[in-house]
Each structure stands twice: as C-alpha cells, then as structure tokens.
Image (cartoon, rainbow, N blue to C red; front, side):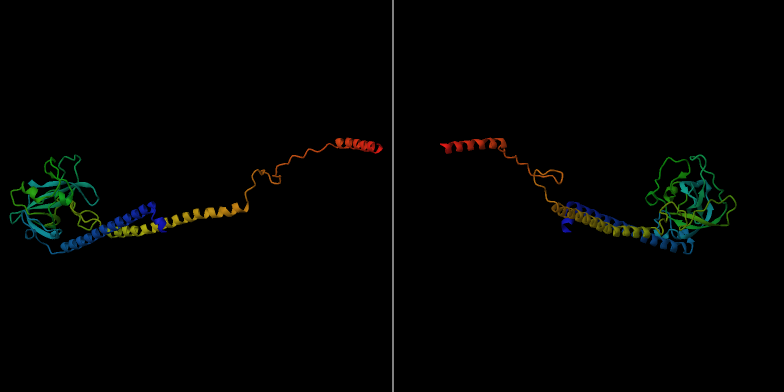
Length: 323
C-alpha cells in the first residue's frame, strides 16, 4: 500500500482530495455563519416590529446615525404633507416583482421638522423618462404610523446613485440628500407607511410596501433574504466533504485490483507454457512427421561385380591345383 501511495500520481491525488475537503468544509462554515446572522437578524426585526409605536422624533433627529437595531421599529408622525417636494425613487419592485417607483412625500410635522414618507409603490409611465402618474396627496393634518427605515446608501443597498436623472427622480431615499432641497430640518431615516389616520380616500393610496418576512422585499436595502436556506446549504457542503474520502478509498481500491490482475497474468501463462516444451530445432510444423534428417545411404557394391569375381577366383585356384 505504501508503495502505491508514495507514487507521484497518488501523492497529487491525495493532496487534491485534502484540498477539496478543506474548501467544502470552509464553505459549509460560511453558510452556517450566514444562517446564524440571518437568524439573529430575524429575531431582532421581530422584536422591533412588535414594539410599541413611538413618535419618530424620539428615535432620530436631523443628521443622526440610526443604529441598525431601530430599523423596522413602529413610529408615528403627525403633520401635513408637502406635495411640492415629493419625488419618486427608480427601479423598485412591488409584491409581484414588477419594476416601478417608490413614491416619497415629505411630511412637515407639528414640531417643524420634515419626515420623508415612503407612501408605497406606483407603476411606471410609458415613457421611462417621464414622471409617473401618482396618487393624490392627502390634505390637512394626518397622523401616520409606519416602520422606521435607515437612510439608503450605495454601501448598504448596493444601488449605485447615478446623476443626470429626470426631474424629481432619484435612486435612493436619503434624508441628507433631500435636506438640500427642503427649508425644514429633515429627520434622519424615513418612515415606511403602514397606516394613515384619518383613512385615505379613494385615489390617495399607493401600493403599500410589504413587511419583512413576506415574499417581497420590504425595502431596497439589505432586505431579509435567504431565510431557511443557509443551514441546508451548510449541511450539503459538509456532506460533500464527507463523500470525498469515500471517493478516495474507491479509487485506491480500484488501483489495487488492477495491480493484482497485472501481477496474476504472468503466473497463469507460465504453467501453460511448461506443459508444451519447446520443439527441437528444425522440427517440422506438422505433427507426426519425422524431425531427424535423412542419412544418405552407403553406396552398395553392385551384385553383378561380386558374381563376376567368383568364377575368376575359382578358375585361378583350379589352375594352381593342376600345376
């Protein structure tokens, strides 16, 4: 096993698998931290939304930096609307996801301050550069109840604040930006309208912005999203990390199987070769044929020569006897 694991191929594979485990584990931790943050944020928002409404002037003042814990806190404001300085905020969606505008109208409070009031969503005009048709502005003194929202900035909302827009159109709801256009001091943050007293007449209401926890976004900045998804994603990444060693073991086992097959292949071929010894050099290819080379026959003495010699010998012996 060590001989296999110490090969260059398996060292690189093991390092790759370890890197995958570390990356997937880190991604799981990141998702788990997001889950904890979302859970904490949801709990904070729930506490803020169920708090008792208080006058907006008790939580904020012109130029103040509102703490995040006050966001969504129910607030009230009493005064009259200033339709001359109302404006729309571009690229906002309603509950159906339709792109349109938010209608924002300043409310001049009985204390002499101005409060930016997001009255709700309105549909765009046919001409994108034109100011859209807006509901009538309620007249007289009204008491508003809504959710306190922080000033929108590019850093918080991710929305780029571009210039050169048509008149009375903006990209963000920002009290500091609007304070330059109003003579009254503008309270920091804005009020997201929920209820009006006296009740609005027909044609005076825009489509109300949904509360957090619904299917749509409450505001454009840092909307509460991802509820219930971060924890499953964290578990998913950790399961993937646990599967990596399983894959590593399967590959290693397959490697051993292949090596055993290669090692067993020569051992099987050797007995087969021993059962049929190699043929003598010069043996013919077909069985049954003699492999020994034919020996040339000795030259035999012709029978005729032996026969002719015998009479001559007899004649000679006979001549000797006679002598």
